Each structure stands twice: as C-alpha cells, then as structure tokens.
Image (cartoon, rainbow, N blue to C red; front, top):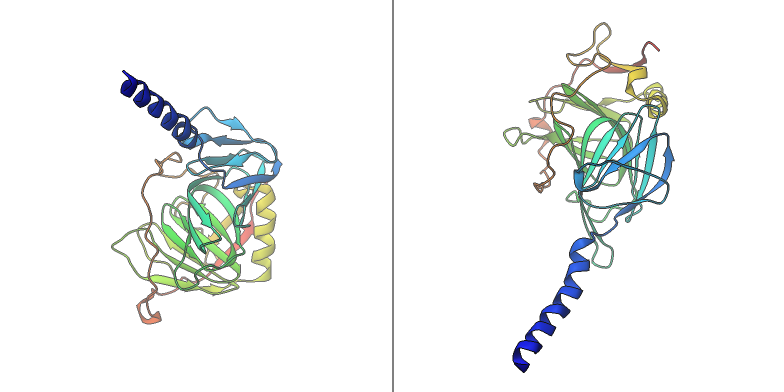
Length: 273
C-alpha cells in the first residue's frame, strides 16, 4: 500500500514539473513596434490574435500584417525583423544559447516584404540563421537585407554584410555568395542569378515600400517588361499556412565557376496608386 502511495506521489511530482514546461514554449522575441492591424497565429493555428507592443513570439508562431500595417520584432539575439504591410512570416525554429555560442534559426517567409537585421555573427563559416521562401534558402553571415516575395521568384537586396543564397530544391545545390550593395533573384525551380550592383535609388524605394507595401510598387526585370508573376495585386501559388516541420541543413558554398549567369538587371519603380 505504501509503495502504491509513493508511486502515486512520484507521478504527481513528475507531472507538476514537466507539464508546465511542455505547455509553454520559450519566448524568443517581442514586438517592439506595431502599426495598424497585426495578428499572430500561435503555433500557426487559428484563431488569429491581435498583437500589441511587448507581446512575445515563440517557435511555430506565424506573424501577419494587414493592409497599411507594419510590425517590428526584436529577437533574443538582438536580431530585428520588420514586416511591411500585407506580409506573412513564420518563426519555424529559434534557439539561442549565448553561453555556448550556439544559435539555430529558421524563418519561413510566405508573403510580402521583410527587412531583416542580424547583428551577431556566431559562426561565420557556417550559417546558423536561415530564411526560407518558396524558391530560396538564405543563409546569413551577419548582415541586413530586404526580401521580396513574388509568385515566380524571390528577390534579395543586401545593403550591408553578405549572404549565402541557394535554390530550395536539393537538385540545385549551387549557392551564390551575395556581397554588400548587391541584389539577386531566385526564380521558381531555378538557381540564383549572379549578384548585380544595387543603387541608392533601389534602397530608397525599398524603404518606401516598407511603409506602403508591395501593392504600391512594381518590380521589373530589364527596361521594358515585368517578369512572369510580377503583376499587382498578386497571389502566391503556394499556401501561406504551410506546415512548419522540417529542419533545414545549412547550404555549402560552391566556387564562382559553378554559379549561374546574371539577369539583365532589376529596377524597382513606383507603381500606380
């Protein structure tokens, strides 16, 4: 009888310790600025919750900004994530242990425009901060960059630092090393184009689009016509609520000889109001 009582008490103690830990994931960042209607899908599931300043985010959460809305998050490693209007991003994985010099971050970007600033470089030889889109995997080596998502491609603009960028298809392993003040595009089912010089006007246009959203601008390849899927307004050919589950292996850099040819150039220009 006493043995059964002791066993029951042991079970209760274990439950008291483990259940709270399992029920509450760690907060890995907080909203430091919120403008307009911003909501959060906890664990990627509805109902959507209205966001206010200082609300926390956890791995598995999805952030959505509505029309004329904008959100800024400051993460536990001091990285900053800013979402333009009508954008959507998931915190797929976010582990940071400064005592051990360890970080493992995977962001999944589903829609719109996002400005990401990574201030700390823990392992410059191998990316520990990744962003995934429907066409690309972006490996970060201490930098700040803008990502635009369109149905047929991902565009990446890099004012500072450097990025490793590859197709999200395992059959296209070549990875482009993008340098400061360069930009590139990663088409659906294709490899990244070589980096091209980024102009101050492009940077100003990106900063404006962070306030207006992509519906107030247009992205063109070449001087005369837009690429397939660049029309506004646009819809992604993939679900914005994809299941967040797989881990991503950081890509490996390949020599310049294996990189693809560049496009004719990309220009951001104001679109109709």
